[in-house]
Length: 274
Image 1: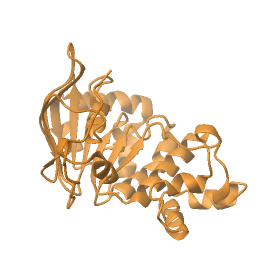
Image 2: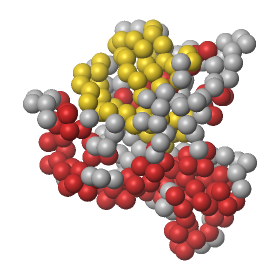
Image 3: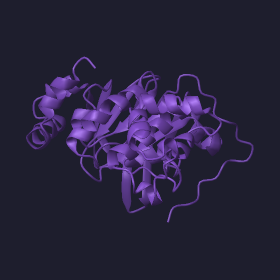
Image 4: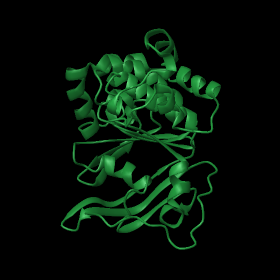
């Protein structure tokens, strides 16, 4: 069990301008005998998108949890706009971040309530605009029996995987945070649904500082930088094309393997110029 994260006495609220995220020589473990991250350093510039890929168990999703400060690190520093996140209030930190996870948590309430949760003080019109940008508004008003008042069931069981992800995206758009964290946001979806949702994810990430953890490489080809994490260490970094052009790179091997399974090359051709 980890130690509960607490605010330091008298710590200030996070003040965000651009939203630059910086990991500086970060080490972290859940158990002392099992290091997860080993002296990891990288930067997500304000308004840019950085993706993290790598084998299962490499520590990718841990990066997301640490930015959200679900845990405190054992060494190094994680900062946003130069402010150590361990020295600001958790409320101000999390208020500034929007997360679209692999498994979206929905309340047993209406679909409108679940979108509105992103910013409870938003107007009905603002909520519907967010749904439109997430490409679920038309589906809600034309196929859901009670429109936005349709109840989604326990944990959203009445919605498909794609619909739940669109609700999560709409919720994040409504929140309008400076920082977006995408944690395997489409890996539980079939390939076609994933492709349909990718444009909504691109929209929510536009001009926002975005850290993406991804399994399917076709979803991150347009990232400003891609990092390959293996055994808690960043072993490769560069753009999609730079990594593909590097002979024998782990990334290019992963790309070729996934091209056989998912048809990644076709997906990449469709993503050019987006």
